[in-house]
Image 1 (tube, rainbow, N blue to C red):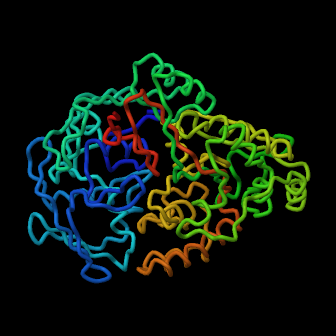
Image 2 (image 1 turned 135 degrees about the horizontal axis):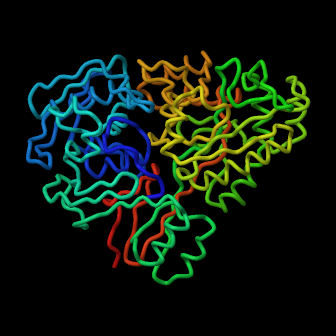
Image 3 (image 1 turned 180 degrees about the horizontal axis):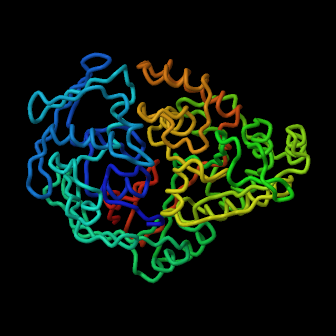
Amino acid sequence: MAAPNTTLDPHLLSNAPNNAVATHLFDSLTVNDHASRSVPGLAESWTRQDDTHWLFRLRDTRFTDGTPFTAEDAIASIRRATDIPSAASFRTYTRSIKTMSAPDPRSLLVETHAPDPLLLNAIGRVRIIQARLAATPSAEFNAGRAAIGTGPYRLRDHVPGNRIALDRNDAWWGGPTPWERVELRVVTDDAARLAALLAGDLDIIEAVPSGNAERVRADARLHLISGVSSRFVYLGLDQVNDVSPFVAGPDGRPLDRNPFKDRRVRQAISLAINRPAVVERVMEGQAVVATQFLPPGGPGTDPGLEPTPFDPNRARALLAEAGYPRGFRVTLHGPNDRYINDAKIVQAVAGMLTRVGVETRAEVMPWSTYAGKNSQRTEQSLFLGAWGVNTGETSNPMAALVATEDRPAGLGISNGGRYSNPEVDRRLKEALRTMDDTARNALLAEASAIAFRDTALIPLHHEVSVWAARRGLGYVTRADQYTLATGVTKES
């Protein structure tokens, strides 16, 4: 694993490392498969009774401690995931649920506030724990005492930031996996991760360093596995503070205004970035230039959005027009162990911005630290972010990243720059209650066009995910980039 999970509590903090680890131990009512399609999980079937009522028929299965799974466990889990205080809450997935009830132990009736066309996909994000553990502190999950699920594995050992040892759950409803024992090791350093694979200490690694792909190809014992992901990599900008914390004038003195509130400045930042160079040189071809949340043609995308050209002269002109003819200083923050080549991206972009007059200092840190700072909103002025568009359409990233913050409604949960645009909000909210796919995607496309033409975020690229494994092992690549032991196959 290239990035550490920060908790074994499946409801505390929604991010890819945490969710991928949780998937080994805990099931969800529906399962988002490798292409982000909703398929049966703990709910073996469902019926939409009308636009706001869904009836789920639940599996007859048990938790790994032998306790039967019932509808009450599902209700308690969804409520806990909705209500637990979190910097990256699952509320964005549960906000549409109005009531839940259990007609019998194997039936769950869900009523939504309004029509929710993505309910099946959304509840696939919420892992199910025992109802009796709903009030249990996260520390009990991290210690392993409460990490009891119905999933394909049971926890044997957990050393935070180092490794997670798992034993196969032979009674899993999905059937026993090929692997009796699994160890998920956290190796955040790219070189060390590859070295461990080359030495035979690991069987499969994620996030293969782009510069070392040839080294893997040259080793007859190993092979590469790749697939285009749904991860959208972007820059976020502080658009709420009147005075931004990491911005100063060209002389180093604090500015009395936040330049990122000016659309011209945001556009200048975007024009200063040579995206093809980032893809070719920094990502070494393991990415595609982004114009919006998904590549063109994806559900909810606008076909009229073109890649922002690299135009440093226009960037300088816009800065001067906005009142910054000599530019200004800023710190660009990012992680150094979370996204593919994240630290290199930060360094490269910082250099590009500096060349147009925005003197940019790059500051990177481990994901475990960065995730907390990034969620505080007031602690960063310009920052590297990424979002796995795991619903396969754009309402999820739009609701999380550019919707006006409304935490009770589950909107703007990860809107680090606090961007706010009523026209985006109006179309998004209408789309979120439109059951017809064509009409919903048209509304999302309109909202995408407004947000990205307003430079709500600065799109960079979509990642291509690359794994390396020893010969004899395969992997079913996933749009969400999760590395799951259940996806590792034995090849003939």
